[in-house]
Image 1 (cartoon, one colour):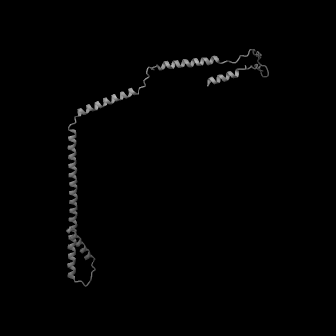
Image 2: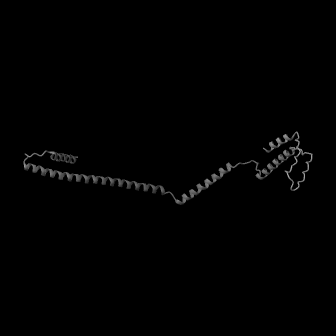
Amino acid sequence: MEFSQNTEQKERYVNRVRMRPKKSSIHCTAALQALKRKKRLEKQLSQIDGTLSTVEFQREALENAHTNTEVLRSMGLAAKAMRAAHENMDLNKIDDLMQEITEQQDVAQEISEAFSQHTGFGEDFDEDELMAELEELEQEELNKKMTNIRLPNVPSTSLPAQPDRTPGSLGPATRPRAAPSRRAGGEDEDLQHLAAWAS
């Protein structure tokens, strides 16, 4: 602390000497003495700065060394703790334990699957047989609907014969018109029934 105060006082003194106005009336010998003293103080100041830098460097080096020592000691303690923790552990025992855990997980999975299976309580039916029976029922229903459908009546009158065409005859050939078919009274009803069945 005193060392730093002395350094600051010398620095202030050197700065005062530097800032002093030069007078032509000052005696030459006194000026030379002051100049020598100034140079000496500047040199001392430079040496003190160097010493302070060295001390600061040494302090940082000591701090780093202390930190490294603490890190090394902590790592040693951690290694000892891990060694003590692993002392009672055997790799073969660990492998056996992991195998047993895997087996128990498999057993638990099988139990879970057994619980989640849908039990029919005597209702185990063959899917193919059920589908075949369903198709038979649908076919029977279709047959019933087909027997109830009434088809339209076929006209009983015969169509007129088509006249023979001679090759080279002039004029367009006339086509006889078919006799209009009569719709039975229930034909519309049959068509509606057929449309309902198709949908």
